[in-house]
Length: 134
Length: 197
Image (cartoon, rainbow over all chains, first blue to last red; front, side, top):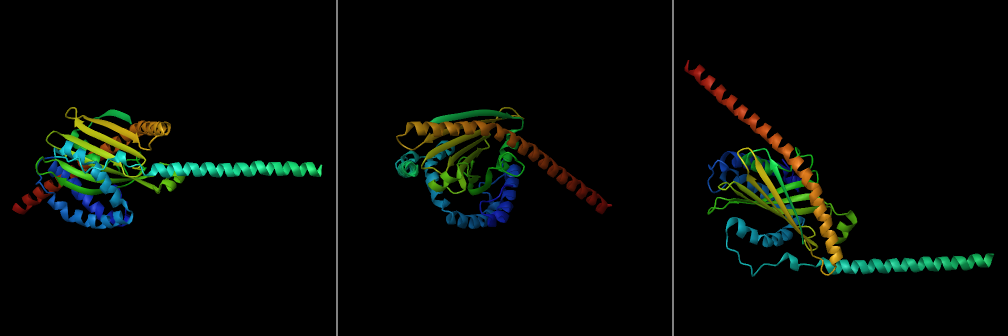
């Protein structure tokens, strides 16, 4: 089975994944599951306790909240839920990186111009010097 | 916005495909080495519909150049949120994936659907919508979108090949397990007969 992004959670994740796969193939797909996945619930809780810390440490929890918000429309489509669009912060609306990208390219252009001047000046000095020695 | 779409057929039952889908990114899949980790974030059966909804966090090795990732603050890893819906009544798996990393810069939403074609064949269909968000620079936006569409195309063949090997391995493992169980039952029966005698 695949690893967890937090190596310290690998063991609890493996236990949960094995439990889930058994439940999925033997019960859920055969229509023999109760509405809650009870037999794996305790294992899932253990896994989430470990994973939650790792997500927070890496700052992924905030990114996830945004992405979940964007996914509400899909929940409405695939689960047939009611969907309220007013509070949705559209992904298209977020363009915070663009100004910094612009600033970055301006900075790069300035540095380039600076070096170009240095080179040009350097060669003029050299030509003057060499003409003097000659 | 640019769109990439692709359809494939797998010669396995829908049940097998939907089960193997959970272990698509595992050591059996040598074609998916860019996937470092797969974590389940939430999972529940919707009481009204019986649909199994799962959120998974997929961690990939960064595919953007290291220096660019450094500037944009993406780090060495990039993350995708995959929300999936399994409907056993209509035999449909739908997976919607969105990028978490660089989500200010680009918006990639991929939808994959697995549906049965026959008793032993399953159709995979994939649609990816790619939108570069950096306002104004149409040329840059176009080139970013084109690069990603191309990458989707390149990965599609690899993805099919990788999943085929997972399906084959999955079938073998399940057959072995059934065999073990059958043998266990037989042993118990023999034991029972012996006890009775």
